Image (cartoon, rainbow, N blue to C red; front, top):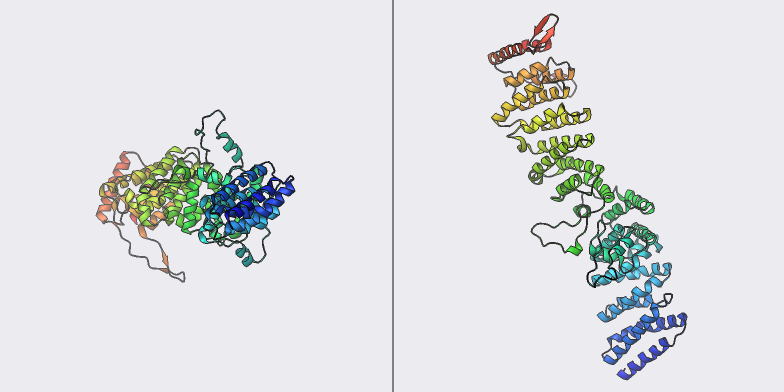
Length: 584
């Protein structure tokens, strides 16, 4: 075709469209001529291309004032998908697809969604975002085939495109319902100079870029956004994606402020949670990224400001944390596991529940974190728990959890207390200062820590002797119980001062303390698999003369200090039960 022929053809189309008086006439002309006219943009003749551009400008003006005029979207999609199409054809096709798709009825939009899905592969990021922005509100209107294979064939895309789609869906699910208000508050006033408009404040979980790409030029109303989110949940529930790939979407949606969305997501979450691998490292990292927002890693290039995601809101964090507590892998992701703990304890975006979960996560880390990762962070965790104990006065539950966490940390990292018994002394003192609930937690912490002191320095050993001597006759039964345990665990069986403490405990007014002290002195009864008592291991005792001299010295000291037991009219330095064990 010659240049004059091409030009004449475009002019005739221009005349036909220009002479269309009614919406129906204009729609009919566009349905017939718009896709082939766009192909003329490939013409080698500049005059033809110029005439086509004039025609498209005219069409755009007409369409702007006629929102009910439909465009041949399906033909435009096919033209856009054509692998032989040049970039100019695809660029203009997507413009008219974006213009025409929202004008279609919902059922027609739903019918075209599978075609749009297939348009995503290999396209530029901006065009992918445009297509996803168009089709996402239509997901709820799709009628899915009952056959799983047919469903997958309808929406089959490559792995990279699938990941892009899921990332987009996640950003939509993170959108707050007041997004129109947020964007309007940050829009530039008419009187403000150009180029000085403030950037939109990114809602929790989103970045400037992700907010911009899921809102487009006209953000959805709250009601439309709710329907869109429900459509996404319905679409994800059609089993088109692996369960591990959509678990984060359900967690986000289950914390939605709209009941309909949260209920639908909860249903899907319960349906798949039994088969999801909570130790999948990719999922765990994604959850940490959602929880924390974008964290720059030392030694790696910093993230561009517009791509930095803000941390998730408290509702989402409350949904994520129980998953951290059941995932062994979450306890090993460093430094995120430590950052999450301290963020929830001392950050701004937290509450009482998150603080409790953060300390439970410390317990979880103590049990599941590998040694090579736990040892470097143990001192940080210990100082964090001690700080929490000192600063938290009105939450006994949280204090109790923190005390037990201290015991578990020291048990995993005994090197923290090898040269200093200051921590044990603080906890022994805390027994007399805490309420009943926290006192039991302190006892548990001391019990967990006891084995860490078995190999302490000689100077620390002397201080430990003084500490348990001081506590063996305190009023609090927990203090006496722990003094017995430390005398048993920390010191060898022939150690004189600790054996003397155990002798005193044999005369305690609490039977369980007496029993534990006797077990420590003489060993426990052992039974075979049939329940018959077998011979105990040989009992190791201190040198006779040494222990007798020590007891005699204690008798004199206690008599001089008037620390005596009254039995009838007699005053004795020890209780009769303790005397009995001395004789034995």
